Length: 344
Image (tube, rainbow, N blue to C red; front, side, top):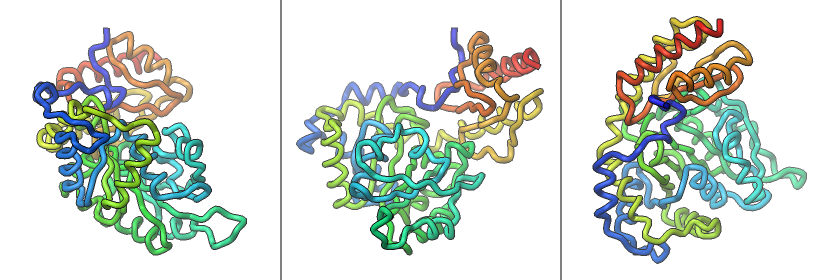
């Protein structure tokens, strides 16, 4: 029996307040634009991120997809970090469904794209090459152990894109984790991008959904793409209601997740066979190294101990989140220590 599930913050369950709000939600038909709960969520999300309008979508992947398709045309090029989620974990949707070229540029160890590298990657006007239209950013940066990229860094990257005539989109799946870690309003981190997404179903603990924000014209175009993808929803206020509760109650709570992640990293750094730097842990993701080819075995042994993480080769992670107690984390750490000793 699994006692502690640390695969991702997507495994969270809605809080009692969310369930009650979902039960009582005022509903309409969102395709007609008259679901009042969805409309309120979209307005609230746009306000928090400093944009004109918002659009409720089914997932972060869909949010990034409709955003890219709204910014770029068939045959255009999009600059992406080589370690970003859009490039590596979204099934190539932009290329398959939008015929958009993704061009990877080097991401540093902290999830930052150097402005000079961004500008150098923009193609000259040449019919041999696809025109570069869009730059995508990511904050927090998943592959960099959930690093939070600060407002100055966000501005530097966005300014580099804008200087070269590009639109800039932010994959902000965990943008509120970044805001909490940096102790700034989330709007400080989205001020200089043209559009952004964030996930309700990760650290915010909702069962479904993400929100895209941007200008009114951009959101109108994103809505068209959402419809084309078959994601026009009807009485979706029944899940949007959880999002409203989350934005009121779950953002500040994320600090608990960050504290638990740093505690876990500190304990893990003392274990045999684990490589992790606790000083690099800012938010709720702890990526750690294990001996080569041992990752799947470690995950399998942990599952037998009642702890669930994703496998891999030598790069594993745990993600802290709502619904896991301090005692659960300690249980997981003891189990991990026992497993690491066993495989030595």
